[in-house]
Length: 256
Image: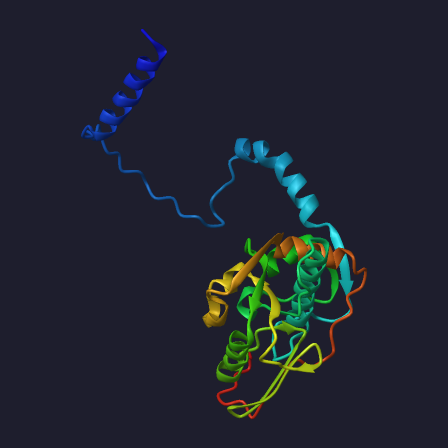
């Protein structure tokens, strides 16, 4: 038979087979197994995964850096939040320069994406996986003056401690008092480039001002970037500048 017609016959058979009704040959009800400390390990399974576990443990326990203070996510200017925002800005700026793209002005990340804190002492690879377990990518958003106004309005309205780098935002009660970019007053006539995550770029965490703006993909995974930046910093120097200042903030909680 000609191969052309033979192939067509196979495809036709597969199509009709998919449409044929399925018959249930039998159902077996299995006993539920409770996952608890009393459940014994399967020696054969443990033996199979042992070399892979050893290799993974070795990588996860690799020392990246050291911190003499606890790095936490609490407060309007959390040291861990500001540090990761700085890393995001640095990584995006380096990528933009290497790829002949416009300079990056600032970075915005979300505090909810930072899942835990890092205690003082050695910083290991596994700590970064615990802090950032997601596969988010660093992207650069091109924002005109109107969208930047919406960004500042977002912080004025929600007064949430989503970390920033390159920005200074101050409110008093419900009034926006200060909105600076790289030390300069915001200029509505300018276009700004803001580094963030692909999650926030899609409007995550109510950041609708990003939606519909021009998006530049970097291909950089945030977690990989953080690992690289910690590795390049033998001892962490926590940021001390104040970026978010929400004076007389209504409904303040201990976690914000």
